[in-house]
Image (cartoon, rainbow, N blue to C red; front, side):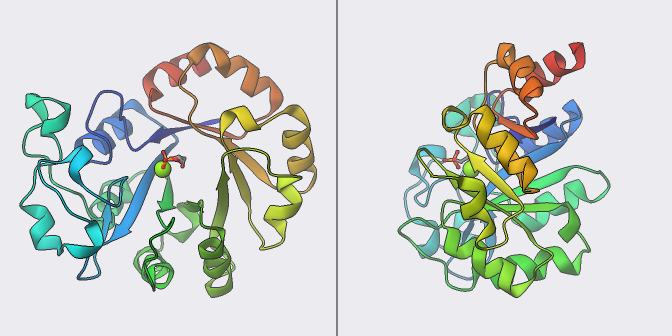
Length: 240
Ligand code: G3P
Ligand code: MG
């Protein structure tokens, strides 16, 4: 079972910043999850919300700001003085960090109500140019986006995210060739894991923050846990 650091090591460091990603690498995680958006000038940047005020000292929609404008803002201070000066990272900066490692990168494409036309082509271009496609797992709540990725490149691994109540999610996932399902952890049970595996679909859960649940998920055969507390989950997993 693999441990993915959700937005980097986000319980300690400001989420989706290079310090959170570096810390996750240092902890020895198997994977990192991050959220991607497109700036006004078409740069792939990593942050969770469409609007930046929760995690920065400024306001505005990512889609309305250029990368240079975003760089003027602080993305660390909200988490504490110690993180002052953190900038919004680009996807390329994170790929630079991961290039010399074997860490899997789960790129969540943030397209809810707001769409970023052409984001799938851009993502594939950036990761294939570097030869990193085999180590990338694309996920999204926007399953049209995942289907498009698969159409553009059948080698891209994709995972539909969902919150609850999806009927036979493994069968649904296979309608567009998905390789994984990413249910909210409360939306998973033994049948879902067993049937998914029978159909060659893997199961990663989000967001699992209680280390005492690690033995249960390992026993069920869950493939991966996405967590804000990678240090604690990794150490629990090592005990098993
Ligand atoms: O990818 C798992 C999880 O990140 C999905 O929800 O809102 O934390 O991006 P969210
Ligand atoms: Mg996410």
